[in-house]
Length: 109
Length: 403
Figure 1: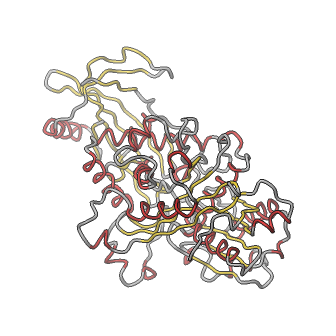
Figure 2 (figure 1 turned 90 degrees about the vertical axis):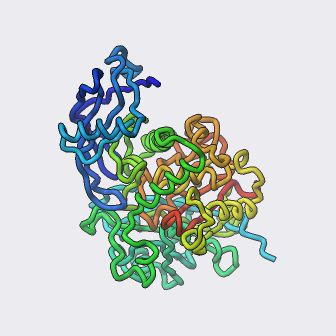
Figure 3 (figure 1 turned 60 degrees about the vertical axis):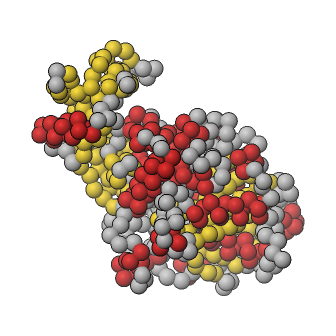
């Protein structure tokens, strides 16, 4: 099942009431003859009800089917990806991402 | 036989500070700011207030004990003043005290004020209770965070209704994006910044499935209400009165955490409390009759589940209603969090219940500016203090007097 991924701008702070995050990197990871799109973000939680914290994390939109082949109404590039739903494959990709990046979380969109 | 409070009490004045990181002010100045707006709005003299209720939750690191912080700050003329605390329903509890005082005939005019000032304590979140927790709290809430407990609510809800994790996550993102959009229109909101659903989805996880934008923060702020009887209000020259239709409170009995009957997917208290409130207000079909709501969105999942516990979305149907925009300001349904909610207006615990009523009051008077809802009839506010398995729930309904 393919779905669109709207590429978020890098190095822009996105602020919530409890903290903020910044996406700092977008990468294409070779995986079994295809490429997996993942992003790395940094976050700080400084005024949440549960306290303070933060860290680096990765997001995995999925396997790239079409790369930035259009833009949305806000002018942001849009790719077509295949979400990774299989838990075994998720685990393999999680290991690969964590070998390349220092991140505490790897989340599959 | 009890007859309830419907139309026995009118709100004649309200005030609310800007919520946020109010480094320039202490709790006392915040109380004055909210009170001055309310007393100007009521058009009465301070000495006409006959009794007052102060709501503040974490008084040990805030205003201190007793009701003296309010009576001293406002120079109230040696009248009865009571401090109340009931977790996140504290502000509503203060309002309840003032309303019952007027409805009973004990006083003609009463004041309720809620305040919390936590930004100066040197800690980003809510402080640990420490020795003030009581003897059983550490057994009830052992080594537990609020996001952790509410994340379990989300997981239980998804499991019960067969909703895929990412579908629930996207619905929760819509909840947050909607509140952010509303807060942009509100000059008193803590955070006035629109976000997209995609930006919410790209935020880091706090406790799965709750991410950064699914959690509310901590704010400084105060809010105030002045109430009297409808007859006295009219005698003061007030027209188009806003009156109280229902005031209900429901607290956990212990069955949620003590037995296996509760499946962890919703709030038993809210479900019962809202039914009691509708009965008191004479509302038969809340989905058709409620015009607008401010609910306790401490976490996005709380707001989503509350839509069902308020008997507005059917069980398992809140996701669809949210995605369809039923709770958006311009969605044609029941706008929820028109002022931005806890997540964007902010959450100074003791003030939050009164802040919600302030928005309903502005809306009913047609004074909500860019976020004005056309011709509202009933406004509902909801607070939830504590955890899904053990909590304090309040539901208040206000509306145009006599309708």
